[in-house]
Amino acid sequence: MLVVGLGCEANQISSLLGAENLAESALLRTFSVQDTGGTSKTIAHGVGLVREMLPHANVVRRTAVPASHLTVGLQCGGSDGYSGITANPALGAAVDLLVRHGGTAILSETPEIYGAEHLLTRRAVSRAVGEKLIARIRWWEEYTERERGEMNNNPSPGNKAGGLTTILEKSLGAVAKGGTTNLVDVYEYAEPVTAKGFVYMDTPGYDPVSATGQVAGGANMIAFTTGRGSAYGCAPSPSLKLSTNTALWTKQEEDIDLNCGGIADGTAGIDETGAALFRLMLDTASGARTKSERHGYGQSEFVPWYLGAVM
Image 1 (tube, helix red, strand yellow):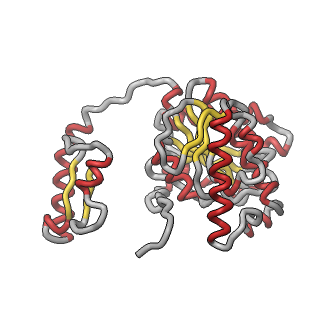
Image 2: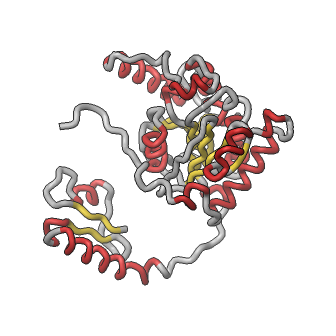
């Protein structure tokens, strides 16, 4: 990894390394533009450092590991009336298989589970875990009130065009992504996820910001359902996109990795489609390229969530 700073910014490289208990090594190098002497010199210096790191990186070899190493961030964007009965339940079935194999799944997007949080708290392994989720809901209610917004009017124009009319309809479908296993812990945004199994992370509903928090917390794959169409990609972690209906798959197959519309068409079942998705997750973790990776998507969609005034 090469970390490049300007030199006089508030977020100094030395402070970052100190906060994260990191030190420069053969595979972690840092420098600043101001110390190097300008743009062209910075580029040349950076290229030189990367070349020095390559022999060390090339020593690394792929090895077989169990599925318990997978941590999948669950996303839905451009949801429609099919989301809650096709792609989201299929993703939930895949999550159950992942958890059964020792892996981790992160459900997020707090504004998009609003009104359906009781379906998660009843699955919490303890009262304390359930109360952590309710505390995040209350925070969002207070936050939106301060900003003169509301939690009850979340569906986007695309959601409404796709057949969703209320936040409750959207939330009931969104929660289905989490499968049926116990909710073992609740995390704040970008907090490192240490538990195994099904967990929740508090994030906004905006997909790039939400997925960024999941990846920062440890997600090494994203599973993204869509009913209206999405070309989302995530450079740090492969992103699998799942269509909720066959019409979307037919129209936008070059961007979609798996069609879940067969559930609505009557040609496939939820468990069958979930099993196919789980196999696709394993193939992707083993090196198969996702559609977004083939297109080169994801370089500009790593977007942290910041709160408060920007000065």
